[in-house]
Image 1 (tube, one colour):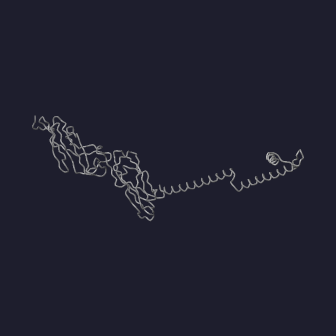
Image 2 (cartoon, helix red, strand yellow):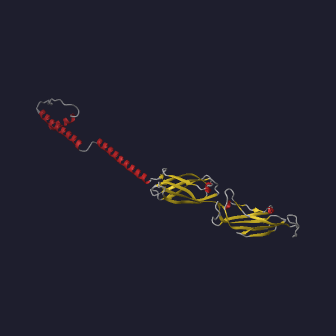
Length: 337
């Protein structure tokens, strides 16, 4: 009973105050205090041993909670460093895959032929490596400097040369089939090339250049004999080409068909007119007031001119007869009244 009481008493005061070196005395003086002191000393030794064991457990066993948090932070930082290194490796790989683009170290020239200079302006040209590492390309930026009615057709051609002047590769690029570029519109054209390993310079040009204009933009302008002025009018006309259907070439000639419908617009004259009836033939037609006739010129090559989109041919006068019995020059003739 006393032993139990001594343990409880020591536990209550051990952490609250320092104990005197003198042993505790019992009021009754029955000597039972010695037993209490011995029991207390034994319990104190047990508690001290427990604390020592706990300390050793802290050192040798699981770390404190604070140490766990510090370790987790270090692990997180290590993970972030690894992720950053992986991202850098991915970026490096991506940059390797996207290698290419404009290479200003490769010199080049671009030639624009004379007829193309009336239609196009070279704004820029450059050399590029393909991103996948397979081949290269030459690009040229061209601006249209004429009205949209002029339709251009051309291909860009490029050749590659090594430092020793050897021709490495040459190809014709994609053409624009009568593209309708407005005045001031700019486009970039590309020539894809394959053998580019030792390229040192390039030459590029506009090749197979053509300019066309829609036949709807063309107007008939026929050369009428002076005697027919005011009496014969062209009331309808048309032009067509055998190759460029619906278009008329500029600069280059193509076989064409040109036709005109003429009419005697007088009330008092019979007109005798001569005009083409094919490639080499001609015919003469008498036209009473209000009558019409067709003339056509076929087989001859024709090309439109820049700034002059007209077509036609000559129509001659074979005679003008006044229906009251006199000719235009005053000589009498048989009246048809």
